[in-house]
Image (cartoon, rainbow, N blue to C red; front, side):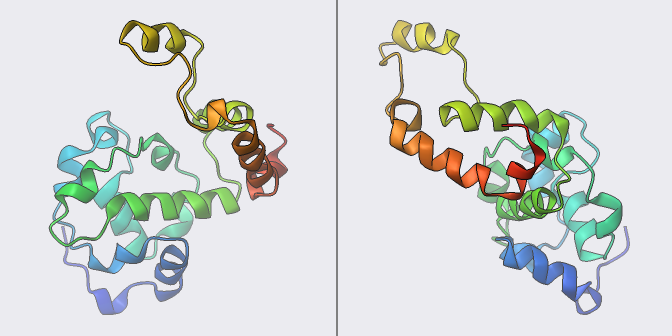
Length: 170
């Protein structure tokens, strides 16, 4: 792999990533530590961590904006824990996802979690989880937005007023 000359990065795209919360994009040195622990990489998605960051850094933004790999990120944060440069890869992935959402380039695999988030306040929700929670001694309903109608309404308002609200999936 050729070295990346950070002085020749696409400054406009880099700034867009930074503005959307991925300020560590210029710290990434393509060491691949993030990919070594990434479930998205292990699952075989084509565009994860290091590869996503390289495409961003080298100005290949238009060719990746519609790729659904970033939507597979489960926010486990392992990448951030292992990154030797403190680039916070998780934040870069989510910055890219925010840009995708603004461009309405949302993976169809994200629709169910988005609809769940809108309806219940949780992206991953299952009625079956109530029984499982009780089996391990937890309350059937967690003390989170799922048990708080006001919080759910705030989440719905945010989603309805976001670019995703324009998609008509809620």
